[in-house]
Image 1 (cartoon, one colour):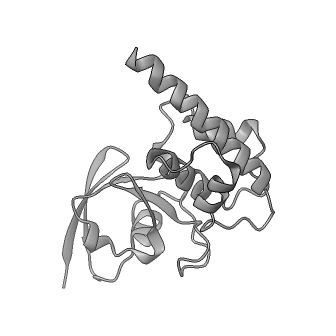
Image 2 (tube, helix red, strand yellow):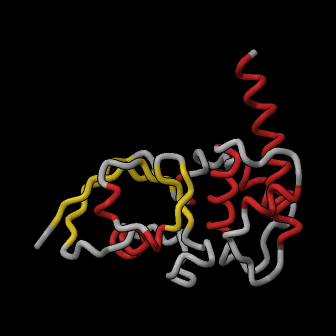
Length: 165
């Protein structure tokens, strides 16, 4: 039995035929659409390496069936930068050494973008750490990650105030 799913991925509408209704968003992105920035870590929703944004909200793509999200707007790590201009969270991760081996970095960045968009980041490091607690870093780059999120939050808030003025 074949099923068709239509998704807007990083701004582009994609229709994919699924032979199995149990295909996860993670496997669809990585194996069918070659968007390998989203990582497969634990494949059980415990590490956050597969975090993406679906309709602006953070989810673990390893736990989400692709067919359940037909019509959704999906943003992956590949969709954040605008040409050569990095997203403020990506730039902040580089500036604050928010990564070491880099395996968890795409999920960390996507979770941070979602946290900021959800207005949950604030300016409290503890609040940021709690908001990102579902994303694990085996290297222990948490201090740099927290600093990066706080810096990006300030940068994005300043840019939003300039646009509003």
